[in-house]
Length: 370
Image (cartoon, rainbow, N blue to C red):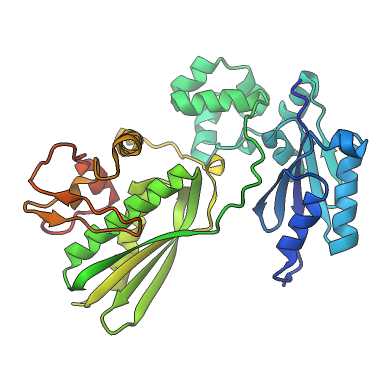
C-alpha cells in the first residue's frame, strides 16, 4: 500500500463558459490542496495525500466536499474517481456518472477486483492496433494481460510497450500530480535574410522548425495534437493553416511530415516569403500519448536516432547534431529558429553531423537540391 490518494475530476462545463471559469475552478480546488493539475478546462487531478489529515476526513468524505464546493460555488456537476495513483483514478472517473464518485481502496485485492474485468483498451497507451494484436492471442481484459509474463508481452509489443503494459495491468503507475501549468501551445519562427522564393529553402526552414518544436516538446514531456503553419510574405500579409496531427506526438519526423503537407496544400507559386512560423497546438502531458503498432520496422529508426541526438545536443550543444537535409555543400548558415542557435556548415560531411537521410525521407520527399 502506497498511502497515496489521487483524485481525478471531470466537470460538466456550460456550453458557453465564462472565460474566468477555469481560473476560478483552479482556485477553488487549491483551497483543498496545493497539488492541483488542470489537464483540460473540464478535467483536474488532485493529490489529496497530504490534505486528509488537515481536513480530518478520509478520501471518500473529502471527495464529497470537493464535489459539493464545485456545485455550490460554480454550479458545476462532476464525476470523481479516487485511487492510489493517477491511472486508477482516471479509469475510475471515466466509469462514474455525474454527481457520483468511485473510490478504489489501496489494497491489492481491491485493485485487482477493479481492473480484472475491464477491457484492455481502457489502459493508457493501448490503441486500436495494440488491442487487436492482444486479441489475436486471446487477451481481451486487463485480467487476461495481468496473467501473462512480462517477457511474453515484450515479445508481442516491444520492450518498452510490453513493460509499460505489464505495469499498468497490475495497477502500478508512477505519474505524479504536477501543479506547474502546461502551456496551451509553443511556437518557433524563422525569418529569412531576404525575401525567399525557393520552395527548397522553405522546406528546409520547415524541417528546422519541426526539429526545434520536437526538441522543446520532448524536453517539456509534452505532446502536440495539432500543428499550425504561418507564412509571412513580403507585402506583410500572412497565411495561416492548422491541421490536426494523425496522432498526438512530440517526434520531429511526424511534425515535419505534417508541416510539409500543410505547406504543400498552400500551392504557393513564386511567393516571396519573408518568414515561416510553426506552432504546436493543444499540448498534453506525454504520458497520454498512444503509439500505434506498425509493420514497418523503419518507423522506429528515426525515433531511436532522435533519442540519441537529444542526449548529444544536451551535452555538447544544439549545433552538434542536426538533420542532414539542413547541410549544404558550401559554407552556408542553417535556418535559424527562435532560440538563437544558428549552426554553420563548412563542408559536405562535417564531423558531428547526424545524417538523418532516412528520417527526412520518412518526413516526406526531400526538396530539390537536398
